Image (tube, rainbow, N blue to C red; front, side, top):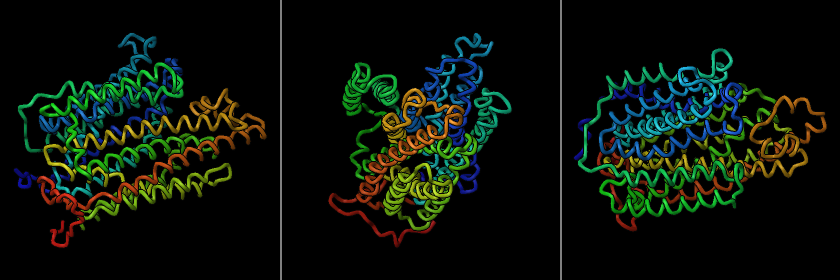
Length: 528
């Protein structure tokens, strides 16, 4: 049964899109805002040895919940499930803002409360991100979806730049608590818009939720995130806790595979991976997250230390990267809508992203801000070709009933790739810095990478400062060499993606015959 006749008129889509964009911005902005407030939070609560868990708890909650929210939307209807995730996110935000206050027992347990409430907030954020993508998939057929997903990519780019700027302003002029409270009025507007304007086909299956599969997947994801968070930092990679977590991951994933094969409504349908395009784009998404999120974490560090930028200005220095991603995402989205073709974009994007990574390997102490901005612009252009095209291909590869699961899986693999990338590149950075002449200037390479004391750096003698800056620049450059190794695999894999026609209505995808190269001509396809 098709849903083409139930597709809302385009003006209605634009109104709903505004509410969806606010919800997506909440999820993207929050982590960036909170990062600038962390020093003030630690100053009030203490707990410096645990402050990284303020970020990790949010990432863990988001990653664990993403595929579950996606499947719940498939089973019970996306509107109610998505609105529930918004409410969970707002409740978590309010609790985070009250952490350590007199209402909850005072500041003694403030850090523990904040970490717990950030996990709640992350659970809601997982539903925000996958819900937006799946609802766009319900409202708009694949042929027209590119332009709307390009807008979503623009919101993501805006949030990544605006987050540090807004967070810095809030922290300096109000209180760190408003880094969380600011979500409440924005979320309220999004809720009001979506409750009154979002109209989706209602559907509900008689199958039960695959709770065992969800639990096993949650255990596996939690173990993976703990390995990538603790490995090389809290514990050695060959230590008992890390090896035990690796073993737990393997066992949980094996059990998850067995359960999913027998479940009536699996939380992550393994049959999706029998589709060539979906399997390829899942791996591409993992590599994209691995290279992009892992490496991008080191650009602000380079800007604030080697180039001497302030925390706020380092956000402004990322504008070329975000501008490249924003403009290309919008242009590519409109081009896909106009022509119906998409296969070339992930190939070109992979090549350009690899070129950007190669340019960033040239960063050193003498690299000007203009040069590094040009390098970041190239990287942003490559990311713009890839970000939403990968989601579009994943959604076009599955039937409408699996749209939420497919959207959740695509987001999930990108997040897991980013988690692995941050961990691996952090270890590479720390080891490279520790082996440099200035690597022990702050008590060891690992500490220098994790918590650079900028005031201490400024007060070092000129010769010692040059050694430290040289070591930092070399370590950051080394990270991009590793990112380049993973980036070059993206266009290679993208070459094998088949050009399956984008559906002009929300119908089951066309399946090419076995062995047939499905680069199907779209000359007769209707224009949008």
